Length: 271
Image (cartoon, rainbow, N blue to C red; front, side, top):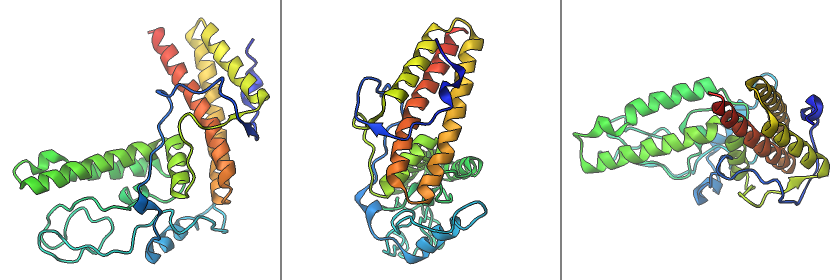
């Protein structure tokens, strides 16, 4: 039988197990950062990143490595007029207004002009995404050269990928870990102890036995609460530089996100 308080406990230790792996189609996939993401980044971008952590409510002991947010030091020139591109990333040349190809090694946070933080402003994220897609969409370049059409398609696809990665906490957290050199690959993450596994079994059993939308909604609300708690814990772990802890908590979030998807599917059955 499902106990309403089973979602209130957060398991802190994770051990190897495989019996309750999330549905690999339901859980967001890990985004792989390119080799350039792991390169040494520009000083001014490091300062920008540090300033982002200086806002209200954030700790002052900045422990993220310099590779977390910024881009490589290389200065680029416009492919069309050869003028120096002053901004990173530069979607368009300020001189001739030609669209530019995607720059390697630029983080998704930089592309979407977001603060490098786990609890980023998703409203700002969406606003920036829509703004970029309005200007970069291939339809705007149908009468341009083949090269400009190609660059438009590449830039638009990159912005889409960055937005989808940063929009949800789970994929955002996994991406941040990858920027720090840690990877949580699908099918290799460890599972919590028997107590946590029992909680997951109880929730899944209750979801299967639920007969009304109200029962399913109750499970969904409890799961949202658990995900909110994990979000706070992950944010704190990342700011304190406790990457192993953040990785463990993200593993737990992966399981609860899977349950949340099952709740949505169950509710659709009642419609």
